Image (cartoon, rainbow, N blue to C red; front, side, top):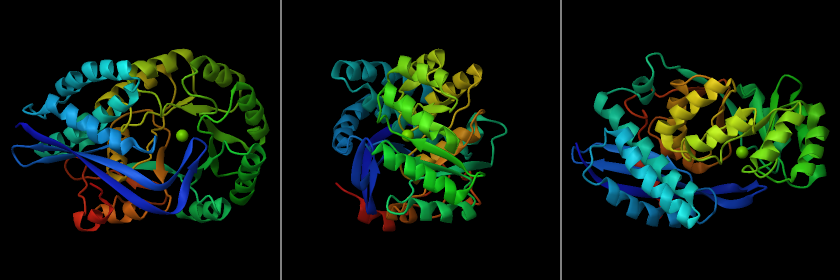
Length: 370
Ligand SMILES: [Mg+2]
């Protein structure tokens, strides 16, 4: 089998309310799927992260056009070989151009598509290609609460089975505290709360805010400071009783090795659409396991990358809980012929070959941009 083409499928979904993070605001949500085509008609599907910067889709189109030249004619089932063939030259280019992460994000999307092809050829779900005994259901936490009514949204999510919720902070400090307080009071002590500052603070401010938030007993405080300040992250993690979560902006095994070595976080958060795909994710999970720390995968894209995340977690050990975007994104409902089953706060790992999902093109076409 040979690779005949690699295509980017850029999509935009309108939003009922903007997605507001301390790092930036999106008025509409961008998504980028990657299709790997073969001479036997099998098409693998992957996803690459394009939320930030908001012009990522334009960059990704040009990058993928160049990267695909490396892949044409290769056997898509030699995933590790292809991964290595892409990694060294692209990361060197990325380092020269100051865009290493963007290069690894492209590799991530291609890697997921190659695993999808392998599963389709072997007629097995991806998790079964990795583990003899993959998990079938995975516990979720909800993220993406309505910014206009976070308390009302939180109250609605708990009876749906979500006992862990993530809140976005890192804006006005008093409003941040008020948000956590109000949600804590609304949902009670038995619901676990995560607060994500998206790198909003410097070290001193992070220390102050973390102390003020202590009484609300956060499950973890995510990215309180700029995440590549590993010394600062390490000092915070050591100083605070509250767990620190980070890793969504760490690229490849080597960066996770540095995080683990420095104990820069208590919960590590690899993202298969960013950090090198499923191939690198498996290695990162093993590394995290050997450190004795838990992981919780980050993922904030479409159902394609979510399916990849589920297979990755189902086949590895040491995962605390899986992130689920519950925000109101019309594209999610229109994306798949058979939606991924979510019930009582658990996701069922798709059972079909590869990712185990099928796109609903008739409904998806309206979100597609050229
Ligand atoms: Mg985050």
